[in-house]
Image 1: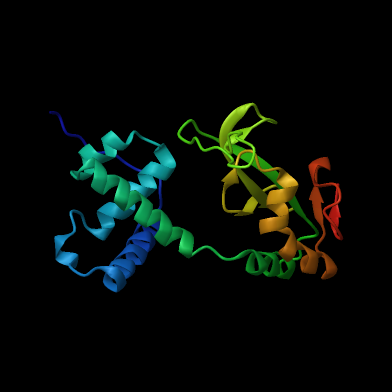
Image 2: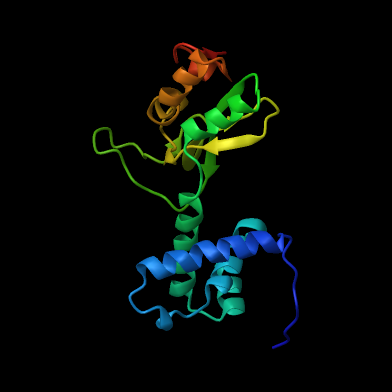
Length: 200
């Protein structure tokens, strides 16, 4: 088998930061850290490569020299570590207000997938099927600044969940105080009736 060098389009400081976060997580939670199949640096590179290049997991397995089960476990563990560092929505809104952002935008999107299948026990319909998009997937709410740059995303809901329902669960409780403080939210007509400060 031929081996070669590759370059990942990520600043070295980003890889080092993620590696430090993973190493700290390992120190807190590992009972036997010497039994790890890969270093925290390798795990960080696995995650960054997976997020940026979206290769097949088999390629990550081959390059990191770990088993498929270990690769999946490491990817999910690293995702949990990185996502735990993300600011919560009220913190994001305070930061935007401090920067003088005049408004934020809210919209829902469907992340398509073919790997989920569960039925609603009450109705019998597929939970993860979106009738609006005619596809299976997960529904997330995306908050952007006034330029359209994403600043926050909600946890995933089944694709059958309407935007307004997901927004009421994850976003609107934080947007109401922000609107009262001078940062209104622009949204599409799917959010009609969302409440004070939500303009469509």
